[in-house]
Amino acid sequence: MLNATRQWLSRFAENRMAMAGLIFITFILLVAAFAPYIAIHDPDEVNIKNRLAPLSWLHPFGTDAFGRDIFSRVVYGARISAIAGIGSVGLSLFLGVFLGAFAGYSGRVIDNCIMRLMDAIMAFPGILFAIALMAVMGASLTNVCIALAIRYTPHFARIARGAVLKEREKEYVEAAVVQGESNFRILFRQIMPNCTAPILVQMTLDFAHAIIAEASLSFLGVGVPPPSPSWGNILHAARTTMEFYPWGAIFPGLAICFSVLGLNLLGDGLRDVLDPRLSEERGSNG
Image (cartoon, rainbow, N blue to C red; front, side, top):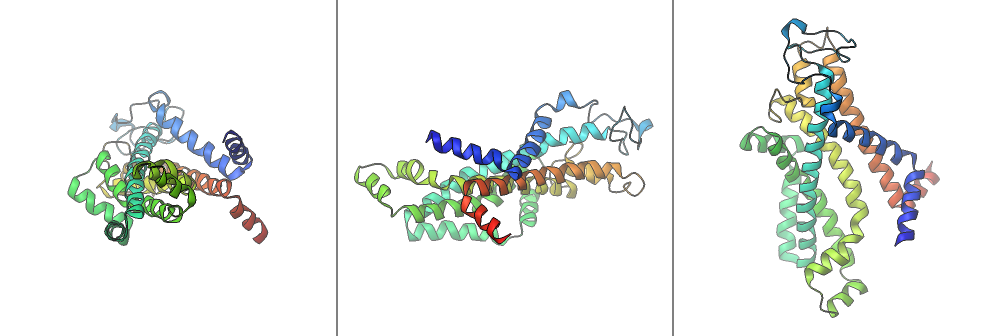
């Protein structure tokens, strides 16, 4: 087990794509964690006399139409994006793995009921589904996490169900049944560890989707309510002035871009590291 872990870490360190993504995401998470120490102004402080100020040492990213420091708002926006991503992915992971594993192990009737519900959720376009839920629940960061978690639950449910259907007929599962182990222990101690790789990859992809979705919901006015410094709120505030004062939209846009890029690089790198055959196929095709 220890040797396998060392080999995995060695392959991960040698994968430039995975390391680049990890560096991007580590930087974003550190900014989110230490936002009060990095921001040079109160992100909600209004100073009309200093509205739409250009880039300077005092305001590295300039100010918005209310005189608020854009650099400080972008820094605090990283915290909101991180909470939205971690909260929604964590909740959807818990719900999806439990429902998918239960569906795959229980049998046809329960399996059909659960998976048809997952299919119904997947049938709705992601952002429209989230907007509909937010319209019912109200605008808040907590509700954003809940809405996105519901939308992402089918992703993990399908992975967990597929792993259970693939593994439940194997000899080690039958041996566990003969030994009298409970269904819960067989599911989560014997079978589910075998689907760790696709779950990790899916987590990075859904984290990236969550950042975009939270920014989109906030931009549309149904996500994190202003004046909270969400990246979507910053873009929304800059929409009327970006033609002549573009820095209000450029910097939060770049923050979203680099966050999503880092997560996608990390996800692709993890896929190559956890499934070396895929990496070899790419190399032979290239």
